Length: 242
Image 1 (cartoon, rainbow, N blue to C red):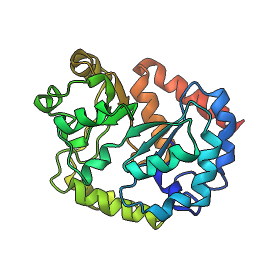
Image 2 (spheres, rainbow, N blue to C red; image 1 turned 135 degrees about the horizontal axis):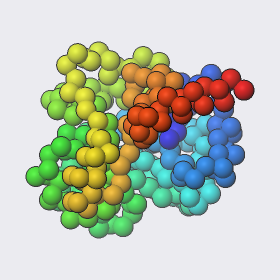
Image 3 (tube, one colour; image 1 turned 90 degrees about the horizontal axis):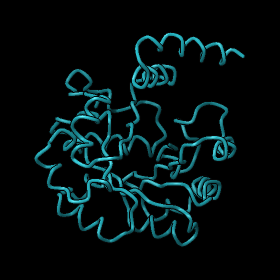
């Protein structure tokens, strides 16, 4: 996933020192994963669409198998006019501007303009709400929602979006860490609770509190059995030293 603040110009602080976007080009052919660009910042203005760096990224990944997460229909239409090969995910963060309801999600799905639509964090564990969705196979649920029970979720996220526009390395989501209701969906949760309802798409949120090394260890512990984790971590460390 290429972070959303790339659309706003400058050097993207989420990529890492010394890395440029052309470094991602070989990954398209080597990786079985579909490249996904996050342009879901709800504070973007029309003049942001013409940012040079963002358009270079769009050119690199306009290969017929890439996804873009957006919160703005005008942005999507701009991208479609210049880079016609992308498919789109309607971001859960659009809920910050226009609150999602099962009926609204159904209307968005019926337009046939989106490959998937994101479910806002506050509904991840609300099964009565989730059961109302008619096309669950078109919906995407976050595995690690941040502050999913927090009444200030929207205002905090807007502040974080402003932070991204300023290219700050400091996450505002850290400011109320002690009060966070932070919970992961386990693989068992997915298999036993969500798949039987018809949900088939799940995505990891960016965890602002972890370093890249910590994120890697988290993914290893999430996907691999306990007895295999230490061996895999050691193999990666050895490979990294090479």
